[in-house]
Length: 399
Image 1 (cartoon, one colour):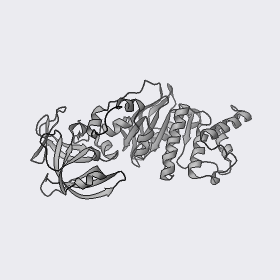
Image 2 (cartoon, rainbow, N blue to C red; image 1 turned 180 degrees about the vertical axis):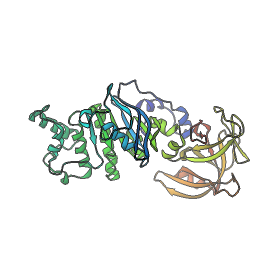
Image 3 (cartoon, helix red, strand yellow; image 1 turned 45 degrees about the horizontal axis):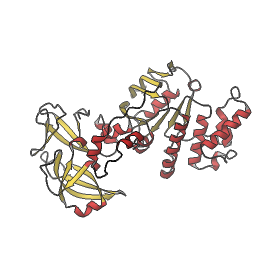
């Protein structure tokens, strides 16, 4: 996840032994400076036959901002991008660009640069000819076209491929050329439709940062469609997490990860553990019949059923229960583990029964390698109160 420079500075001088729960308590929501809104989607709705694809979509894009549409296949993110690009028409709603309603404009009039998933380069044209394709002679002289192509080849760090054809390039090089062609006419907005999905992992890692660098250098507002959460969180200013045609949460990467507003966002982004619980009163939850937790900043209905959620990295393992600690403490049994490079992930089961004949609840815990020698088969897990999330039965966050 990308942490802004000012956030890093705010943590300077703090020792690194603090727990993830402590880190969470020190983080704040940092608002970007108010920027001009360059694009708005207002109450966009779209259906194909009897299937609703988009329902009441509202979002904005600010000057110089990079926004990602993130979600599982079939959630509507590509359809939304195509509506913004003018490749699809909404059934209802408007697309506003720089205070002008462009809903009925064709793609050419919208001044959006588009990079497709499959590159869509012309195989019979050279790289230079592909990049210059959108530079119409009405607006660009031959000398200006050549200068623009040279400038963009330098920008994508491929200055020597002007005379090559697409089939002579690697996938990563082709995608860079597609990006150069999209930005050649100096569009107002850049639209990226899963531009990296066909590339190898290492190429994707390098190219996504290159795309972000170019976007920043040009101060060009951009929207990217992706189903890769790491990709979205690492380079976006804001992320729109989509599910079944709606935006579940539109927020900064930090807030998407640390403050999910719905159960879907919590489950889809990263890894999250869930445990069912019930409210004893306005401030207390019970897990099973023996274990309780106080949450002072909440207001439950007595008897209300909820789910407690927490991430694997926020769990601390204890050899036995420590009643001096606040937060959630439960006994667990370690069942299995897997290697994750710098860490190990433990697969555990709660050592308590929540309901008769209910299957054991699995808990995933991330630990450092040096902790392995201190593990027993049966231990206690502890999660600080400020690292807990609670969701109601509709999947909405209560805290």
